[in-house]
Length: 144
Image (cartoon, rainbow, N blue to C red; front, side, top):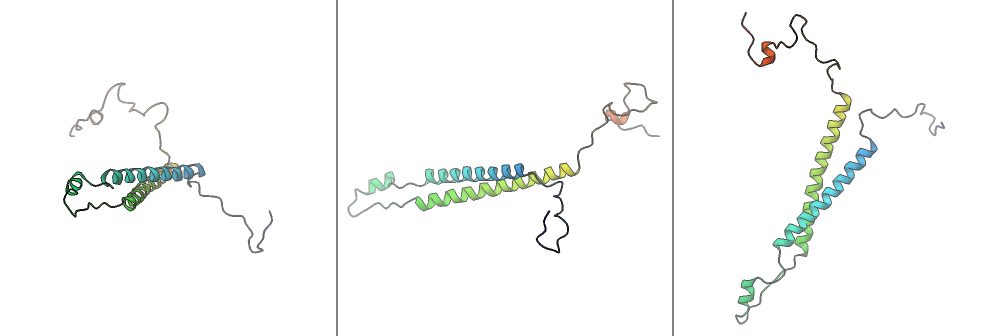
């Protein structure tokens, strides 16, 4: 290995063992993008159904009045705002969930679960097989 700096004597330390793999990070990124796109589509759809660019029925009736002109507005800016707000909210939500999932996975790797031995739980040798103690049956133990 060739060193470019004479003061560097050792290679970089190995990566942390609980660090998420590259595949999980890519999956998380793609999930956030998909959630953002779907949130943008939902935001656009909500604004599209509530914003009209044509005069309402009451405005059309009022147009029969002399010197009255129904005013309509463009929904383009509202559609853009709805799409951006929906995309941002959904992407932030998906990012929070993905971050919590990666933390939980890191904890699972650091502290793997301990399973009982393969031959089953240990029982008291003084108790006959199949006998259940009062604490195992859910009753309170006898007073002594």
